Image (cartoon, rainbow, N blue to C red; front, side):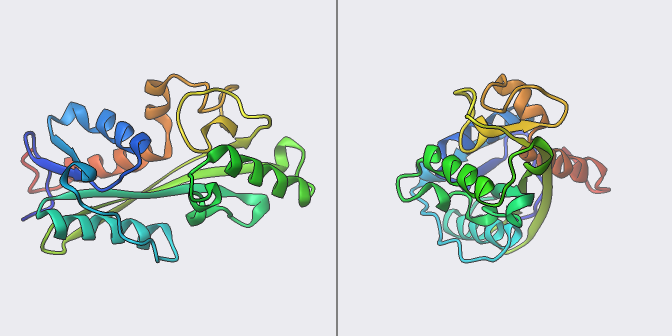
Length: 210
């Protein structure tokens, strides 16, 4: 199986995170793909034992491709805070605890910023990072990285989005991802950036027949 993506192709989204699946579905919908969440196929998520976003993304996409026998797309993403040395980074979801309570995770970030004296806007720089990986059952893989930079605010604002969105204000905007219309966010997010890089790759491929 090759790694190209064509209208009508089956593509498994290797995530059990409902928010991520919705974003992927929105991004992939214009391509006319048959998008299937991994949960619908009963494909479990592997343990994320990698030390980087790239390693964890590939763990998920390759495991899903091998289990489903289908082309699989995964991401590993998180919030990297400059004042915290890049934390929570690959552990962004773990900061939310076993119940995936991001209210708790956001408070942990805020407490850590206060502990290191990062109270002014210029001291609260952060970036959302996303690494997309596309894997075929024969172990072929491709990797694409995206990023969006911004500033962390407190208290959280907005009930849209998911994860750390309510405390992340992207550069050039006076609202957080939690306040932003989902369609607007999907156009500028770290996931959209990685996705656009992936689509540019396929557009420029000499053997592209999409």
